[in-house]
Image 1 (cartoon, helix red, strand yellow):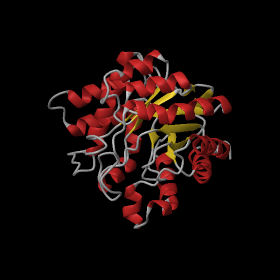
Image 2 (cartoon, helix red, strand yellow; image 1 turned 135 degrees about the horizontal axis):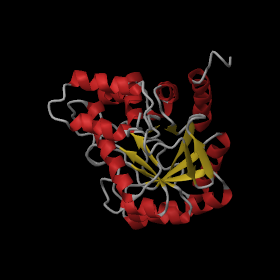
Image 3 (cartoon, one colour; image 1 turned 180 degrees about the vertical axis):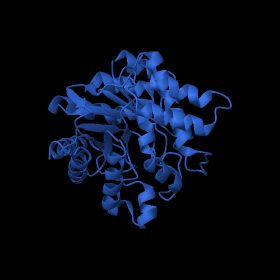
Image 4 (cartoon, helix red, strand yellow; image 1 turned 45 degrees about the vertical axis):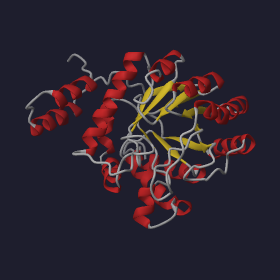
Length: 328
């Protein structure tokens, strides 16, 4: 049988008018049992000096906020020395990737009025010295968490190898070109609205379907620009209610159909606080449960604050996931 592109077939099934949802699901179920070539899916990514073999295990992305107003650490690592020391400690604790962010995307809500937008110049001032020093002192893969192409370009020139774009290439029209021209990896995340407005009554008819369609379009945009290594992230907490977040995590396996490795970041998020009635500082157990569920549902990269603890969670969950009758 001639190899098919799952992405293309899936897209056609979504857009063909009057295609009965029952038959669409029947076709997708049948396709999942066939040998279908997932175009653009590479089980091994090269990110700087780090090789990520997604068939082997789950990879840990440590969060490094060099901002004064992050929801999770409130400026604890806002100086270069503290930021680099923390990044090196996360790497020692098992982080494969360090995700450096210079602008908080904290929404308006339980944490106050929301984070203030910062200029490109200020964001570059915050992140570039940290990336340069970290790149010189460690072989850990470095990601830049930004939706601004100028910041991404400066970060890639300084030693970053991954661009984590919360907008999925939708906020800055130059971002795709910058990522492609540097041969960098893209994490295309879904968000609804902007960081300042995204939690103001987000609504969907079918959150899983709509987020998946949006990410498919981000992948198409990335491919058209020449980006070869793309991960997708459903964007937990970015323009979603408690129910939306739970549905996305419950149905995360469906995102495997997009043909890209899956990244996810439930760490310390508000939905955990809502479920457990706990502040940010007491959400480790809830984060661990969300991470384990995500790995079992197909996540390849987990973005977390508590690296040492979640590394252990990932090791056990991977062992369960990969257990074999023939190799006990």
